[in-house]
Length: 169
Image (tube, rainbow, N blue to C red; front, side, top):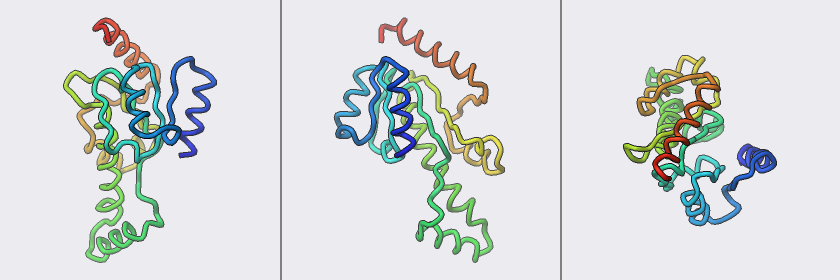
């Protein structure tokens, strides 16, 4: 939550558009305001992904600041990993990576709600590109086009915005 708060505060000082933050209003009010204005930004935590459905141009960018692995001190996940390892498996891949893959797919699903939806899912965690398990996590996501080029991402978002304006959205 600290990262979401810091990002919202920083962008509020830099941008002249509505910036919403989970916890400042009820979830219903946040989603209503976010859906009503495609220029609005909404910041929140993993829990924000659940039960949120905003199809169309209001959601064009989903940012994941890190891969959502379970906390290492989570007793249930730790017990599951240990059980897999005792049975001769890879506890990390079977439990932690699988859990993270599911959450990433849910997060990406906030962007792609209908066939006409367009946007960018930005995963800022470099481990997606560098770690051995990165390809496993990518396989859980929709068939996206991948890039690490920030300028390409900017061009893509600008093209999406231009197409939305041309469609009168």
